Length: 481
Image (tube, rainbow, N blue to C red; front, side, top):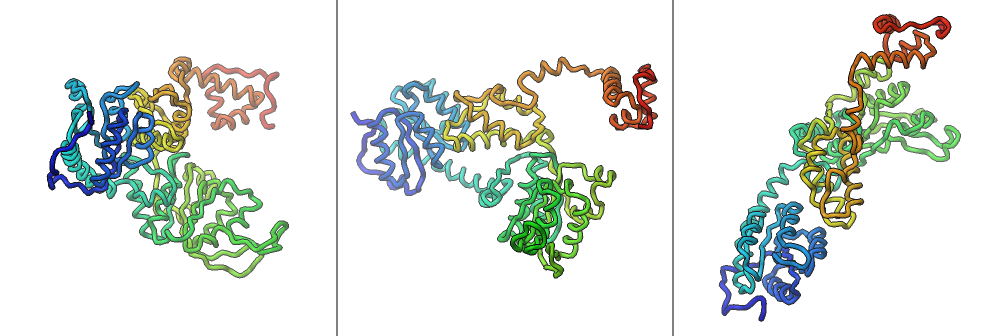
């Protein structure tokens, strides 16, 4: 007895020519072969799978519009597959089919997100009508998706250009993107991006570049702290052949190769003071002179700088030039740490889980709510970079179909709560211990101990009196050493 059967004639109203991608998961080979032929005759792109493993693979690698799923499969409940599919691909519509007519299962399936139900055997017209009904939802979904794309953080084409993931839903990250897009409109304006390590400062710099009129030219990213002092001037300004030992060819520097493009100076606060003055002059005059040459070279570049340091503090300590700061931060963009924008954690978690599962050719695991809650309460000292690495490790080591809280290795470790219980939070007791340790470390020299503690000698003496700390002459050294 065939699983599908024909009826005379076919209503013209159900002529479907849309190139929808339809996947059929059913362990009955005869059914999948017959329905595949029917779908292809109707102009659909069809895929079939006689087991869940193959079905998962097709879902991962193809942009499926509609899934036709048998509620009873060998070795696994179709309802569990439905839950997994709707969690991983929430916009994918599912039609449930079954030869058993268990209404409790049907009701459960519909409650869990299935859009329709068909009982085997059914007519070609029945599946046509079911797909036609579903298509209305798919068309509406595509309209919504298109609208979401217009309001998403960045477009797919920009995502590909910056070769980075920029995901988020928080108010802060949307304001940051809006400011970045505004900055991009002014191709000569310098931008300073601040934020902790791992927050995505280079992402923002790339977005500014690729959304600007300079996007057809080079985005040159330079880690200012990774270049040795002896090569700094040569790397930035270039050099003439023979100008110093090892200069075997003429070389263009970062400023010159960034002509008409963007020069991104990461870790700008780590740049030596002597080079800061030359950088400032190059930014202001838009001309540079190669090492070993005297003729200036004009170059039109845009500067975007970034740092995870407190520049105001560095200026107070005379480690960063105030005039350079003023030149760099025409527009200042600060990226808050991930712990201050909790709304971004879950979308990032979902995105990276799906992404790494696809890249590692593994099934997309279900993330248990307990795990999500644990990550929402985690401080993420390494920010988005730490979350990304954490998820990659979890996917690699995952041997089940779900991710639990224990699968995510956090900086504090799994026993962080127990460790907190051991910490003595009494301020005076800790201050007393710290003063004792510092005195011992500095061989009881009060001047050096005060310097080590970051306080004045008078402040140290006041604390020694407060805690009745007495230093014998035999244990102390000369205080003017």
